[in-house]
Image (cartoon, rainbow, N blue to C red; front, side, top):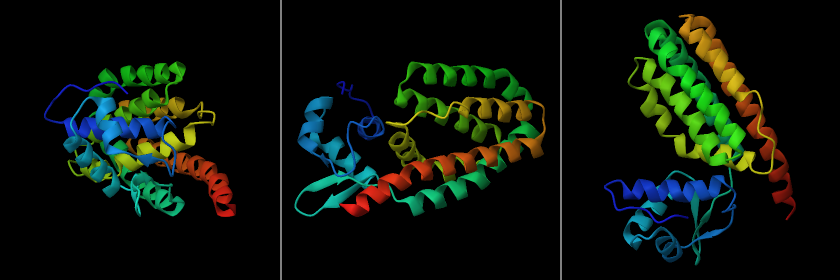
Length: 225
């Protein structure tokens, strides 16, 4: 981990730094997360680290361990399934509304996000892949003209990043993800709300199937120990 500069959003920076370690597979389910070690590694005081860890606990990424502080929580397949079902509806709505009210802006700014995503995949960095994916989806939320979409999905952003990181580490990245993003963007740019919604919903549904398929072997292995 790199030392962080002192800024007003230091707690968020610490939280993201810890999440990056988890999504990169450097902290696995069951691993202890120790405040003192994190503070030293990040070059910050214990207070923002404590606040960041409590935030991650409340978001389901960490959990209490009796007598041991906090550990990285195992993923809950049922929670993942419910989260993606909800996302499918809202992502579809965002794509439809983006096509209906911001097709021109999508055409101007969207291609750069697609290219950035493909570069992230080529880099092999899971952190970059997840960040690029998040930026593309947040772009659609912004274009949707519905100010409730982004806050509703932001509530689940951290857990979504956690899910993506866990299933990608040690598994081959789905090669068609940015092809699917490009198709969604094409429909949005064409002003075809119906197609944009259908593609977005299918994209999230396929992602859910992929994530859950990767989680099932891990869950089965855990149940035997």
